[in-house]
Image (tube, rainbow, N blue to C red):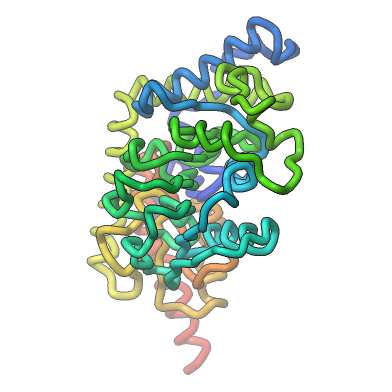
Length: 378
């Protein structure tokens, strides 16, 4: 029987992710629109975004936070091109985006001393093999595999290299051990459901020291340059962005940050995401035709939840199309380079009752395509 109640919000995409509950464009403060980002009001909005981010995430006071171009990809590329080359590099990856960073480091920067610590989809490599005297590049949460690092215990407190972490689907959804992270990047369109095209960089004092003491041997385009005459450009970290940002996107980001404050801060945001994962976990335990791609409980993502189903690729396509046609769940197919299955976003902006209302529809869609296959092959 087809279920009768649908999720209030069918947006379960892993990026751009669902807007916060109750979101309305008319609620945004658009006083900055049509104004220069270098005007007092423009710079104040950008500085507020930086300061509010730092406060909500409980980032150490001696760390720097800045807004940079081109989403998380731009933020990561900026840091890789600006910092790497002085030391050997260990790249830890277990899904497509981490593999992309490894490819860029090896094939674009053409560094010689690069070590890859890898694992198949659904697994984690042995992170304890990362050398604390090397620079370490890793993704906190593998968005396309549903596998996250459980913690940062494997990172040495006495390291001499830098840790460079792509945390775009982890920040505001997972506890971050800032003292273990020298460079962290994320974008607004993931856990906060913001708009794309802007990235965030978070730098430790060690990362700043590297920027001011090391000049890479390759040319850096303007949008990657964080120093001038051997000193950090402080304005980038107080609201003077490298290039022109979208002030509408900034207003949207501030709205999301205000919502995080209203619900009780980052701990509440993490709890909302973990509750969504728990609901899905209980469902998976009760049905033998669906399972997590992540093999171990401790490293299952609570944002980009990747699932395997006992269906063929053509059946999976029919499965997801049925849910979209019923306006029940949009954009839940697995990533194109990942094993076939589902990817359901469970970040803080997704309401738990919508996850609960989705579950009977998953059963209906599975039974529909499975029984259709049996009927057609009698």
